[in-house]
Length: 513
Image 1 (cartoon, one colour):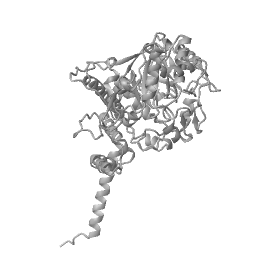
Image 2 (tube, rainbow, N blue to C red):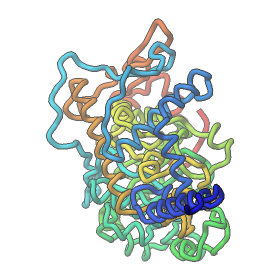
Image 3 (cartoon, helix red, strand yellow):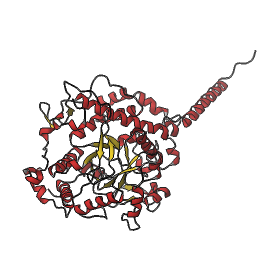
Image 4 (cartoon, rainbow, N blue to C red):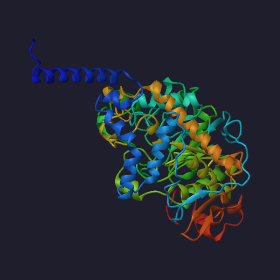
């Protein structure tokens, strides 16, 4: 009789079979195009999806032990990931929030809901001095630069915008080839460094700007005064991320930390800023031109309004960035302690424009943790016309918030210039996710409005949003905040605005009052 195989040979066979199986799995992981983590981390990456499958149980375990105090963030992550994959499932067993807690906000539904409109609402951007107005979606891709994001990330975002018919803000890192490659609508952002259209001395090169702004894809131009993550200082791109390609696109030295100046060199007063915006509109052939800022004080906002009245022209839009927003690297002190939160900033800008009789000429956009349909509706009640989203869009293309953005070692290829890591981000797949996420989120916003008895955003009113002051009382935004009447500041400023109005001047920026 033949002898039985030894235990050692049986073990060797088992190990060989296991090795072959793992090799086959690794080969599949490396070539599949749906999951970034598996393309970059074959075999071991499956642990992430195993844990994702156990997510509800693990989350409840942590919540019960107070290890996770952020159920809102947890819910939003689920919404983004599932919606971007085309999954629109409802959650069982109701909310996990303490709906009686102080600060809890809710939308007021109607006992008589209305049908949802056949078409998604859009916003016309372009005042009386604009000859090429643009139709803006209710939710768009917020400002994120090439360099901060990888080429494939930019491609995926822009292709998603092209598929879904919404806009993609370039960020201040210039108009790159990857923004143009996919054909999506662009908002070209100019920061203090004027990257992509700067002279050798760091000023705006009007000839380069005229040429680039004339491109068909460029629908609007946005001048960044400040951003929510770090108001008062310029953007930063660490030296290791400043490759030869990025240096060429931005017009800066390769390998050196790229820091935008804290303020603009092309203007120094509110009047000069408004004149600069008018000049950009002229150079671009009449396209919408606006500005983006994180609000610091009422005085500065009112100074801008007085400058608009004095010069006789206005920006076509203003984007209000909240201090809670921002995807870029920033000092912790700036992230946590500088700048006005989005609600207060938005209310300040909206009231200032209404009170000076300018609101009908200017559209207001917002950015700062806008991720779900209720965020869109809430911001429009507070005075916005449309919204922009950065963090949620990053998550739609695969960001897992590993917080390695500044190191160049992003595991999902979103914020790295490493070609090997970028390989995991498949543009064809992730662009569809961006489109599905934006489409589903705007659809939910419209559905919420219909449940509130509203068929168009123009019908939203402050009393439709309420906030708990305590466990026993709540109040509507109509009463919680002050709402100025059109032209009220010009006629007779209310006592609460009088000191700021008298302090504001079109000839200087100020930060008091």
